[in-house]
Length: 72
Length: 164
Image 1: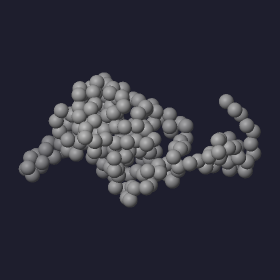
Image 2: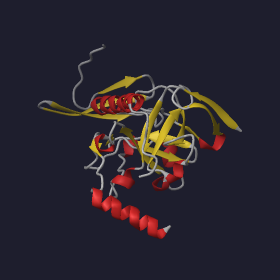
Image 3: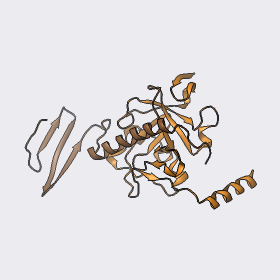
Image 4: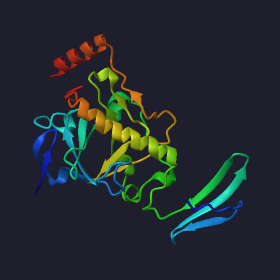
């Protein structure tokens, strides 16, 4: 992992299209601004991981219980 | 034109071209970008008629996610998108609010054990689909499906019977 020290107001570029700006640093919290092409989804990592786990669990649970109610 | 799908779960199926859904950004953490909505029982029934359906991968014959129409169980369900989260294709739609809304469910032996992911709904419109992060406050990752009490269900059935 590349580790870079930055101060509030400073930026990091990832390739030519993605710019991450340190907007504010306050105690334990860092506010980041992300500028990225719209085609590149930006997620908070913990939400992304939770949704990934849920998608996989849905696919796995379906294998164990393959019948869905046909009419509610 | 149909797409031949050799589903490990449902056998050989012919998916009409207009029933296929392209997911330009895929589904979070899963492979593949082409899916189709199949009825709860693909051998009969229709997607339009049921509360549940299968979102079946066209790239992986073993991958299928049970999905449901959230408003069937949560009538007040809302999808609130952050500007950052709304995919390009969705924004390009004439009326994104008219996209069909589905949510994945973890199916179980008993319906009362099903949980739905209200946090990451799947929006479908014009042959394309996107899984998005819902910013609405009351949108848990694992929401148990509220089931009508037995009495209510019987009454509902009777009303439907009377209407038919």
